[in-house]
Image (cartoon, rainbow, N blue to C red; front, side, top):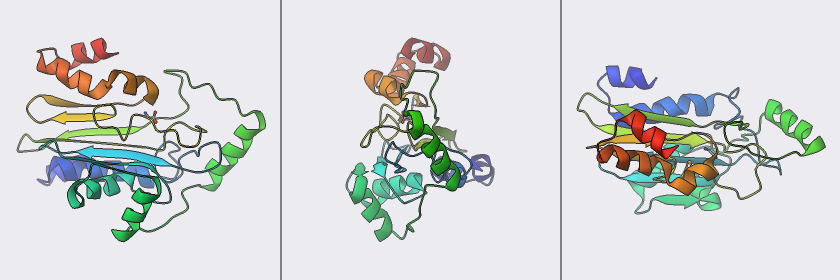
Length: 217
Ligand code: GLY
């Protein structure tokens, strides 16, 4: 989808938003948007952020009942003087912007949660996570870069847990002159290293993308 937007001459910002929206709407994907696995209390909570060529950014944190977290993040960036909106405030803002209220917990994810509750085992280990995130970077015909990141976070996380995905510099960072980085995986580790910012700064110092990622890892 993102490629279609770029091929039609669209902006990198539209490309990353529309690309991420595909997976947010895909109920079979259990780590992003509708159908995402819930926290241990059965609530699906979404984190997302977006950043454009100017370094403007927006994010939503721990938002419930709205599928397209990435589009709400874009609205935060474009239509508010703020960068982050969290929880009920983010949800309220989304409704005010015309987003519809939806139950994000699908039958399949509810069943998986009910099965998980029997043992309630919870030991998130890096690289063996029970989730993944959609991160998308694009560069358009003008050479402008944008990035987006959206997730339902760790399956069966503690209520209130937030990972790297809505945090600019951790889950995503874009510098139009240097490059961009976006992260998936265990968010706690990415937050500790401010991972995406670190990768971009290492590229600024002259490292290749591969070298920068290896050093950050
Ligand atoms: N990287 C997504 C998360 O940890 O929530």
